[in-house]
Every structure is written in structure tokens, then in C-alpha cells.
Length: 131
Image (cartoon, rainbow, N blue to C red; front, side):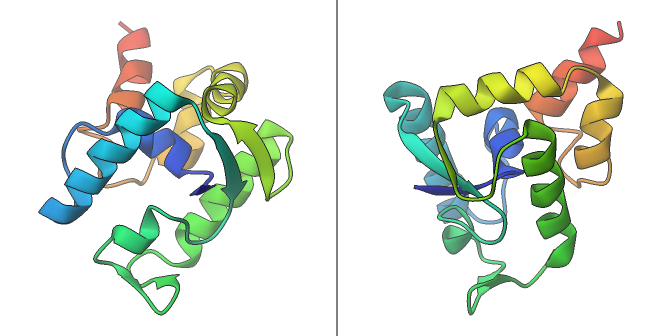
């Protein structure tokens, strides 16, 4: 399974909001499978298996966010010290994220402009560390 780097953040923060009912249902099932089965994933930048189920995906590209999310993916891959196309177990990837992204400032570099951050459990967990 291919997962773009920034989706590793999004999946952790997902709680039922999304672009369409079918996308929300797909993401809910994907999150459950990733946590329960801990499969090997291929971490990439650019559109992934999750994107293919998004209503903003067409002709192999994200029609809404484009290079903005590609840059997020590249920054995360660099911060994690891996190469695009690296294969890791899902929970090992999450462990790498928790080792490298420790503060709200770290997370804001990636998620600061995200429209979902007010409902993202991943982002909110860093806000809660401040209080």
C-alpha cells in the first residue's frame, strides 16, 4: 500500500470529517485496517491509494492542493530521514513521526495551513500539550 507522507499525520488525526461520505467511509476502514494489521506501507510523495478515493483526485493528481501537499510530503520524508519509496510497517512509521515531531512548532511547519486542523486529533494533541 502506498501512503503519501503527510497522510501519516492525517490518518492519525481523522475522526470522521471529509470530502464526501464515500471518502469518509474509506478512510475510516483504512485507519482501522492500518492500526489492526500493521501492514508494510510504501511512503511516497505524490498521490497515493488514499487520494484515489478522494473527490479532488483526477487524472492522477490532486486537483485542489497540488504542489502544496507535495512539498509537505517531501519535508516529512526529509525530516524522517528516509527516502521516498521506503517500506516500513505502519506503526514503525508512526514511531518515527513521534521521534522527530515533538513540538507544536514542528507540527505547524506541516499542518499550520491545513483546513482540517481544528478537528484533527493529531494536531489537537499537540495543542493540548501546551496546557
